[in-house]
Image (cartoon, rainbow, N blue to C red; front, side, top):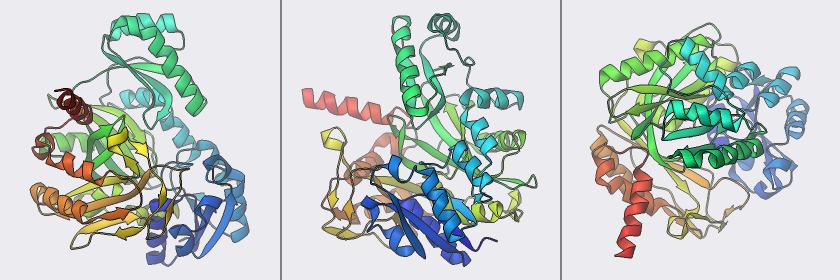
Length: 453
């Protein structure tokens, strides 16, 4: 087992990892930017080092600085959290060269699954259902011909995509060429790779993902699903487990497909296989996330399994002692992402000093965050300032508990989206579980119509 781990991240996920390490008796090393000098993860870690200026490119994406601190402090492993360098194959390769364990899959695995085109082909060969579409197409005119075969509407998606970038919905043939160039340009800017492929646009759909733990000895355990269909511009807002939309039969088939996917690529560590679920109950592989997910707490709440601790154990070479028959989903969990933004002003980001903070309490209520009273929310990073998670015996009770927790939450000094989250929970489509990935778009269109009347 490792005795010292460096956390190459910030905010609530850095705090989450530090807490897991403390429970395991592992020392922690935090890195931080100048803007995060007074951040909670800096105070909680056993050692903390500034690695650069406020911009992420100068600090949290500064591979040389992070590795220098890891070597100088004697850290045996690096936990990347999510985002930032968590799916950067180059960084993982550098860790391997420095003989520092990366708490996640290998650089080859990240590169292989980060290539969406290769991932699709690998899944097809493994017998995992894949959305109809094409392989990578670089020529716009050839892509136009292929689009006619796929049929409209369709999606143009970046080969190296993620976070909703490099994606364009094309409803008619006349829109295709401009959309193709726009998606390719955005992908080149965001990922350094402008290659794209085409995929049939499934609508309406639900976004359901399966959580996996895999060790280096070939053991794979699936910890059930999370539904992540409440999204705005491909960014998740609310997640829950189990999904209210799938039958036990569909759940078993989806779990089997996810396990098959992991074994096909000999995956190691925590990973998530994401599926699209159509109205007829058919599901299709979308992508595999080779890291810890933001929404991992809902799985922890319904299974009682600490995913971060298992990531660390697996990376240190320990075999999984969990078996599939040990995994049982108990009750229902919901997570709301609390973002520093103003939904009433086109989701304008908000920053500044927090003048008052009150965190909800009570049985089975969890708030993963790094904020505190007088903390200054900086303008340089992702807008998420916390994740509110609740667990109850039934979905109805979980919704009620989450509404109560949102009402109790106090974060003064900045704008945030807690009230909007409560409104979504009250939406009949969410309450009855029929909502799809179009819910937020539908709600915004309905609000515009009401304003115009």
